[in-house]
Length: 332
Image (tube, rainbow, N blue to C red; front, side, top):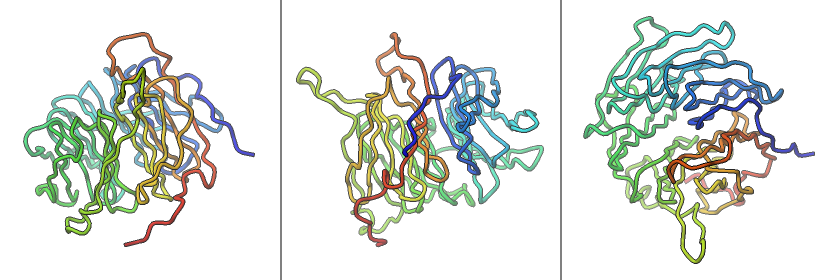
């Protein structure tokens, strides 16, 4: 019998910035928030296992393994926490807010992106952890980044995308202008390493490929989503969140309309749309085995200050066929 979706107990008391599953177990989920906390949940027991503090709002978090977590936010700090010992330390500082943190398994490093217009690499095995500091192109704030193997995709203000090989950050492999007309909200790399998806504030998602050949670039496309007609007017919502299924390569999108869709990017089809959540979808993540989807239902202030439903995290069990492409894409 299919498990039912459930809501996590003890949610953050302010807006949720990120939800991230552990790379080693589907039981553990990290949730970062504007309430200055990073929370670790055991979803099997639906319990809050630990909570760690920053001095200001937390904008992103990640695991390096099953025990060590990292986070960054408005206090300019990248902090490290040990789940078992509850020890914490400061890995390093940016000059402005830390917008994104990701872990590179291949390089054993934390990659951080900041509103100070830099990407920094941190070797967490060393006490003096800063490995490198790299100015981004035209001095633009980092809005989002995503890492797959050695490929790093950085989305910045001004609708720019920079693609790097993290083994040689002194050179930009490719610089691209977004296929979308307005500000980027999210970027996620494909698990098969072929490309990435990005989303923007104007209810669109773009699917792009790394291969610069004309044949590969002819396959890129963008599509409209997270829109609805209200009183005869086409209302457009920001697409705040994307997450790829780890085995099927399909992806989920979450919008400020409170909707979550599953897309088959290769066959350009929507596979399903889930019932509406109480408020904006702020973040999404699939568990490592693809059996769960974490959904942050948390108002993202696209309409300014107003009364809104409580911030919450829903765990949606995913059945075997729910995210499978209906037609298998060719490997070409």
